Amino acid sequence: MEYLTPFNSNEVVKHRKGEVKLGERFRLCERPTLENLKRHKKRGAKFALIGIPESIGILANQGEAGAEYAWDQFILQFANLQSNRFFDGSNIICLGQVETKDLQKRAVSLNPRDDRYYTKLKSLCQEVDQRVLPIMELLARSGLIPIVIGGGHNNAFPIIKGMSMGLGSTQGIGCINCDAHADFRPLEGRHSGNGFSYAFYQGYLQRYFVLGLNENANSETMLKNMDMEPRVGYAFYQSEIEPNVSEAVKFIQATNGPVGLEVDLDALSFIPASAYSVKGFTMDQASVLIKSLSKKTNPVYLHLTEGQIKNETREAKIIGKVLSALALDFIKSCPDQ
Image (cartoon, rainbow, N blue to C red; front, top):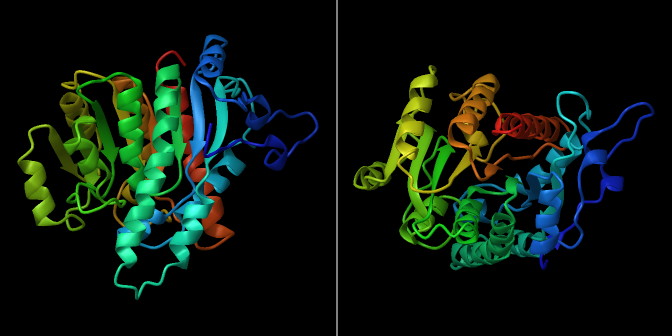
């Protein structure tokens, strides 16, 4: 498929005598056609790993770069986890990453003093949309469950649109987003702050619930706009998570179709993210959230996003381990696992 760079286990997996790593058990599909993906599914594959290494949408939303490195650190950590009795990795196809290096290079080379700086970034963000969309549609049609890692939350739009189209959900799909920000900003050109509003108003997002909002990180205008939409719900962060989980599940169960699960790392406290939070879910709480929501809603995809890496050693290792742990929680909690 165009704009898809395959995973190369030889560049990632660290072999050790007497051990088997998850990356050694991954299924590979160098030609991810619908027929080939369905064949893998019949033979036991269930999940498809894919990375989107970009921060274009974040830059277009007046944020900072760094999310483009999250996929590399995730796959380095995840592929080197042990394959054992708890999980062996054989039901995963690792497709690799969406090719965005050329777009990212163009984005970081733009002059911030240019009057058209943000207009150009939004245009590049649309190009990312166009590359992600057909891949997600193909995966949805194959029946596999995508686990999408890295990049900005702008990618929620092509993911939701692609899944909705691929699954044939004429009324759109539902989505629960664990996030400090609703990302329901106006349709003012594509960026990381309006992925859900674009999906909603274009008819691909049937019902939307945000879990863990930061009270003072969302504009009053956006909150009022969400209040006017009966198919949009939200809950502000609180330390006791079960009431919010129950509210989210009850709200989203009215969806007449599939449900997707999104986790923005800025919903977690003290985790390097594009919008760093000091008040939010702990890592243990995030684990409980993913496990509970996965079991109760049977999601058709997982999107882990906005992990930011500025420091090559400390932040890189943290982001890689956090994303790996959350992805594993999801995989183990999905029904029939």
